[in-house]
Length: 584
Image (cartoon, rainbow, N blue to C red; front, top):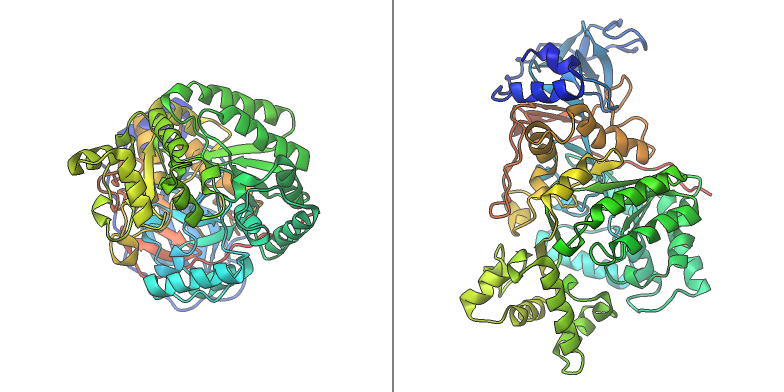
């Protein structure tokens, strides 16, 4: 298959051509061209690709197949980068101080992880290895209702002490504005945007109590949401399966989401339920957007548990209908059939009211524990078996459980799986991570391919070395975007390449109102990924998650060549990406 056929073959032709590219490895970058400085004036005159008055750019990517993030068909061309911006596209005649031979490669905008949990881990290891090596150049954090502030004195001191003790990292901020300022000083490998977390705001004002907000509470929470937006937040997120967000009424959610009115930023919701009550939870999310008059982003859309797999089609139909009736709604999803959460989420939110100490006390109380055991066992029945739960994060004295499935571990130790679950939670002070296998491959592919869907990792930043290597995380933290491009585009042919790239570049950028990101365009931020469509693949597995992907030899973030020939250069160009402020 000729590359021309790949570029012009349309939907099916592009897929066939992708398969024909298999086995073509990355060509090494050309040796640096000597040069000195850069004269003033623009490199590129708008509307005249490749023509300009200057003779040099910092970096030129030559002869690649440009997949520009808009969803348009791929085309051949070059990309020139000067400073932190794309300075020319097309047939570029200028010389680059560094040049990359991108023949037989795809060249795309940097990938935007629309739902990330990197947050403070970027301060622990600013190289953000698991993110940038899969092509991510912008992580949108503050998700599932949990953002970096606003923190009370107690929450700030607890976080500060934990990061000092565990990572030797000093936390010197207590709100989103302070966090973004710190990101600008640290300059990690990826840029960062943040939402305001509804659960964080509610916890700051009301605490962990299971009660409705009063009028005074609502006024304070709305003020905190406005403060977050003024500091640069790009939306409001909820985690309605988690405490204390689960205690909010619809009216509370509508009131707080209303602070987004007049901005492009979405109400992003981890809904109240993603299994037996999925459709009711989805209707609530759409209702909030409709009544508040704001955009909606449904977080990690899924139909969990075999008895609920049929609901995926109904959920997609409801989203399509809402959009047809004026709701600006999209959704995101990671390309795996397993989710990740805390082990305590095997129990109802009501059991976790008031905080961890009260939750653990309820598990031990003879009057409350039988009902909690029944609820937990029903959740396991939904997933299929105790082996559908894998432990990801746990400390001493039970580190032996890390990476193990609960059913296998219980049998090995001669314990009842429920009793083992309670003991692990008790010994760890309630802080245990888990992966649950609950979705179908058919639905996963259908959701990923839907035109209203984006793709997210829903994961943090990890590395196979140092302090971020001490857990057994979901492989999505290393493999989400290469898995989309390799398994679902090239191998499964679920969508064409340009559609997949649009889902992880131009579409999320537009949803967040970021006009200078997510596209290959002159003047846009120089976030660029060079990958091999024939070999790009995720290599991380549930059994061995700390593995970098294949087929992504170059990543440029903010004009900085961070991944070169598949290796970290040690140079990082990320920073804070701030929204435009308060709406109305």
